Image (cartoon, rainbow, N blue to C red; front, side):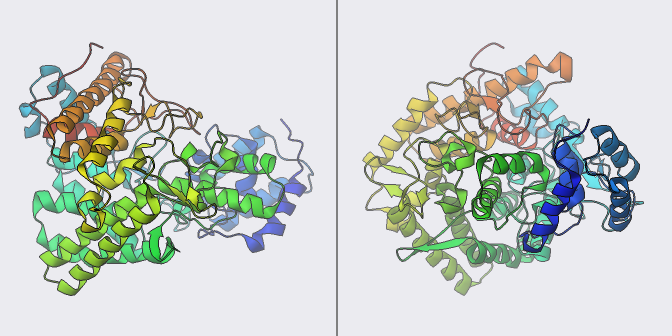
Length: 565
């Protein structure tokens, strides 16, 4: 098969723009260059991520020289068959350097399983615990040169998300570690924390995931919270003493690289600086930009907003689109101050203040306490909408709230307990909180498969009808810790619904596929996987397993299945 665009034209585009490429990763094959664009635009693989996860059999220069010889003087793009043959000769399969490993602390029969009341759920919990064996990995670079892979090396074993996600991911690790701690796999959890700490030491921040093409962006900064749940369970003071300066370093990265001053307040946003497609989604990004925009400035804004949405973890959602739009090409993430990011950073400031107090660092304790107070004030004055009594993302260009729709992210200040800050007393009274919670419950009651991410169906995966494990976790924690009988009832209701939909999805696939745990679920239908987005729904699944184990352990005596599968 030949393609109408000439290889000369593709090469010319690359040569003209290469001097102005804005990208942290400069690898000539995995991050930019003619070979990358040719392979990705040929769609030789159904998933753009496949190529950039393939280790090289030879050095970059050898492969690039061979590719130049392949092109020769031809004016047309090689066929898919020719490209595939070239890749097979010069690259290993995707994920070749990522190998299974048995965690040293995995137990065949973890104690928590016995505490679960229902027999069906005990069997379910045991099987999820067993899945750690399917998801544990190490990197093995034997026989590969130093530049011949896209993975970012780490020393200790880690848990992958599953399926196409062959490497570790930043915010996924929070729920994975929750699950590992339930399984009494504290050594594996500590090893993953050490891996993430090493990334901060090397790069100043934690990349989106364990690939060099993720080096231009992070993900929601939950590392301090990972350390907290690990320390709360283990009281590992030696580890806390080691990691605390590294937590400080990550916090400063977010304040230096992702902060924005507005009306005397400082808040944070996702803002990736790039003017090229994401390597792992090259075809999708390039095609949409090429079809939707004419100027370089428009394309740069699009590429940066797309990457910034990936940094947010919500890739993609209508919350990042122009108000009223259902179209991805209107994405404007870099102009948005997100409620959830600033809630997480508030929680981090409170946690870091507590850590420093515990370690006797009173000056640092006071610094973070003051930063938390300032952020609580900023969250009120910038993100709170008093007309509808809800926190909303704020657009810094329009100087308006991004939209007034329901998103689960709007509730994140309650997860961070911003309402307990003295700066919040004048607007978050019991009546307002009750109104917020009743709004949540009115949504919850409509959906048997969990709370949907939004109420807008755009076909994007972080919108209706998908319900995501991390978001159910946040809402459950919010409801449970508000300390009211009615909110605890709501929390238990959601716990039962969420466990049921996970259990039914697992049970329905037990005979055919060994019991599948999906990345996301359909809020409208019990046990049905979610859909939409850039790729098919994934099985595994790291954060799904972690959330379920956490719930089955914490609420072991009260969980009941809400329906028969």
